[in-house]
Amino acid sequence: MSDELIDSASIPGIPKVALVATRTSVSPASPFVFRTYELPAGSEQLAAHIAACDGSSRHPTWQAIRASASAPYYLDDFQCGEDRYQDGAVTANNPALIALQQVCVANARSGVSRWARASDPAEKTATQAICAGRCSQARLLWPWLHVECLVSLGCGSAPPSRRERSTSSFLDTGSVLIESACSTDRVHEALATTLQLSQDTHYFRFQVRRSRYVSNGRHAPRRAGLLRRKEKS
Image 1 (cartoon, helix red, strand yellow):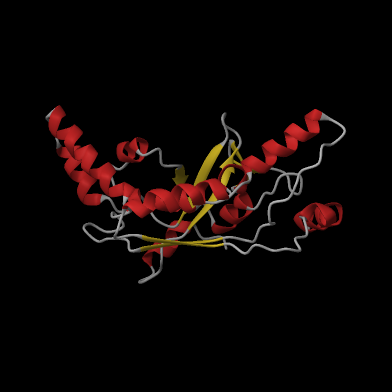
Image 2: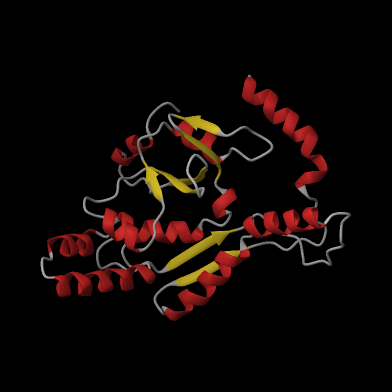
């Protein structure tokens, strides 16, 4: 577990893997991708164009796991150098869109190279538009190879229910804000809508609706104490 993430890239046939954490040492807090691959040279500007998340492959595997699992109120922020990290769910509880961004950027070699070589502003703009168009259809995993399927796996959710007012409007507002920040449905709705525009890419979301749903809050104190004891050991 001490090897860097990038070390696995030398193993033939191994898939690209990314873990999402939330970098809290910057404002506003933003997703950070711990990945087992390097982005191609010259991809920085294309990544900025599609607002792809920052990331790195130069971390030991255990750091990526610890950072991406630092659930607020259960574990302290993970300190790594000058940066602090929390669970990726804080900013990207459904990382399917981030996965799609990484697919677009990680192997966009032909488009990036052409964009970087373009000297005429008009050619640069046209090439950038072509790259962005391909990215929107997730077609840049490998040059000229279509990504045919995106599968998103959920952890289950409770069915909609009526929300009762609490004793404080601050508590009500806080509950709504936390619920909205942790929602996985908005990303699903965006992907389900936009990927329908591409006949070459199929999107599937598996999310179990449970009629008897037990919230983590019921066992939160006991679980928090157990996690803290394990963290110290």
